[in-house]
Length: 365
Image 1 (cartoon, rainbow, N blue to C red):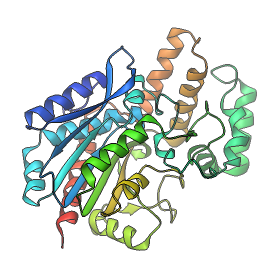
Image 2 (cartoon, rainbow, N blue to C red):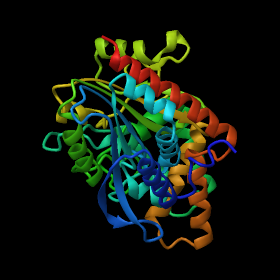
Image 3 (cartoon, rainbow, N blue to C red):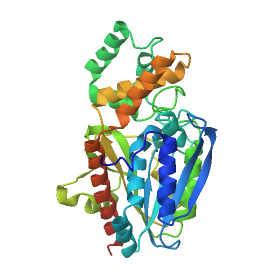
Image 4 (cartoon, rainbow, N blue to C red):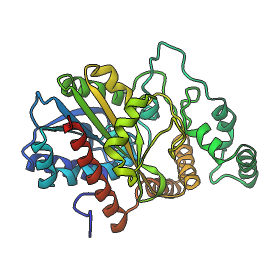
């Protein structure tokens, strides 16, 4: 079936397939070992493979598992790309080096969590922590409702949460929860109080591979927002008219595949804080940067947020019965990875198109 040779059923299998695909492509892999162990005791690592001239002036970054469990999708895309001779030739003919960063957050990938081992949302963790962190009063009000003592929540809790959503609206609920918060270390979308291991390690990779490039493009693969199987191209960069226009020129396909933005309200994503793309500006200031998050839909938004609530509740209650824990983890996986041939095929087709568009954009004078 489509994708069966690319997508995996565990982090360990995904990592093995990535290493094998990189090896078959003749690429060396640099493995940044994670300090924790995986769900089954396996070694965890951020694995990095590069194809192309080390001094190439044009570099395309393809990264997976910023939000661990979303790596089930992104890893499949990377493995398929490494096995695709036509794609690799396309990049080579345009003098574009390609950097594959597999499992930015290997802990979350292995443990079926969205967060790092520090319970941090990596895409809210890129701040100057010596400066005041952004407040989130909406999340502060919601936090006690999100995590009741028992799971599933009782009727009183569900009524209270529904009342909040009814009063403020679903978009406000999404924004309050997902934009990032820095007060509740055990809560959802916690951005941390210091750079995580993944943050620090990614920066090291970017310094090593990006400092010689004059132009850098970055596609970071995500799941969990939007219609099932649709890959939304969300601009990943500063609120700058020129950069947004360049991204839309590369990836919009004449309007067929629009590039959305959190800044103008066109994206399914709320406006976020502490986003990962800012690291490229810090570590590779010499380069002209253009990036997107390719966000694939899975389930309806409220269903995804409910799965996240349950998984965070489980993290706070490790004493939960084994059967309940397994059911919550399965709910979590299904919220971020649709294990059907049709979904996987759509993911690969849209990724391949976006990758080629990025190469063409980098190569354009």
